[in-house]
Length: 188
Image 1 (cartoon, rainbow, N blue to C red):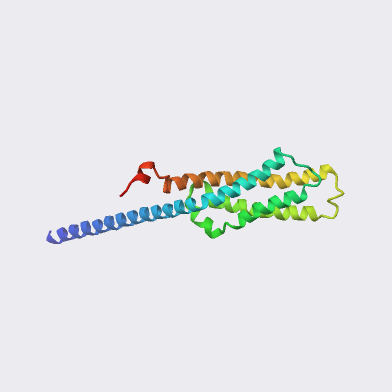
Image 2: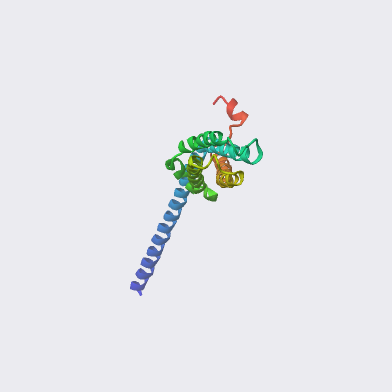
């Protein structure tokens, strides 16, 4: 009987140790997830403006084509100039800048990387299109088709970046809300 009491107490002790270990593991996991989300919100606060600028420039280029004073003939240099501006903004954002955004919802980091890939593809496509030897002699339907493909890529860029910018803004405001007037006026 005394042996079984010790066995029961030993089993209770073992079970208690397992429960404590699991509790510590769960708390540690929660703290790690919180720290990862804090890093993601910090990165979102940093990347919000560069990503917003990229979105604005890409969206503006698409809108210029879709709704503006776009001419099929003679617009090549203006298209390339605007594409290069978009490309320059995109190149300022590295994969290392996007990596911390992986914890944000709606695939923010992956959508931003996809948009960057589409921007590069758009620039390459336009460069190839405009250096095509028969481009100047091509009829308007041929040019319209090629421009349509180019600007469809920019539409996808705009769509991806719209989600990215919205989520970065939300995360940045969550992690670093705008200071209230009371916080600013405080002398402590």
